Structures are given as structure tokens and as C-alpha cells.
Length: 77
Image (tube, rainbow, N blue to C red; front, side, top):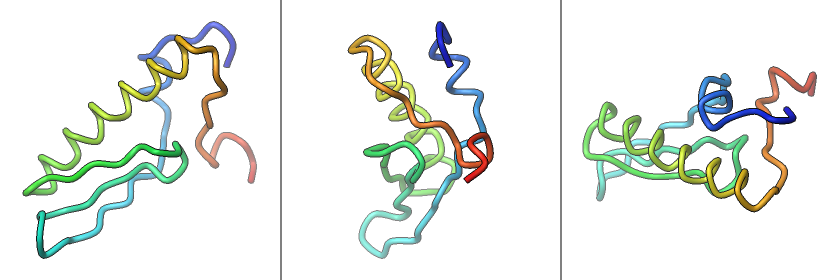
């Protein structure tokens, strides 16, 4: 996705994995975006936290001109 913005990547349909955790409420990650994980006391908080993490990772990858993984639904895998 050449010349795409952070918002373009944020709008992509990345899979969200939510795992209940006895110690921290919910562990959440975007498995198609390596390193993108967080946690929250509630599902709503976990989703909010993963969106913040997603934005930061995409921003870093764009600024450092690194490849950004696309969702599997867009790659035909």
C-alpha cells in the first residue's frame, strides 16, 4: 500500500484476538500485525488499548519505511 496514511492502515480489517486473563482482565492482540498487543480490565478497554498500540506501531513502521503486514483477507493467504 504505497503512500497510504496511518488512517488508511487503521481502517484495514485486521483480526483481533481477545483472551480472558485471570490476572489482567483481557489480553488482546492483532496477530497479523507482529508485536501489536495490549490488555485491559474490560473488553471495551482492551479494544481501546489495542487501537492505541496499532496506531503507534503503524506510525513507527511508516516513519522507518518498514513493511506493514496486511490482513490475510487482503493477501489471499
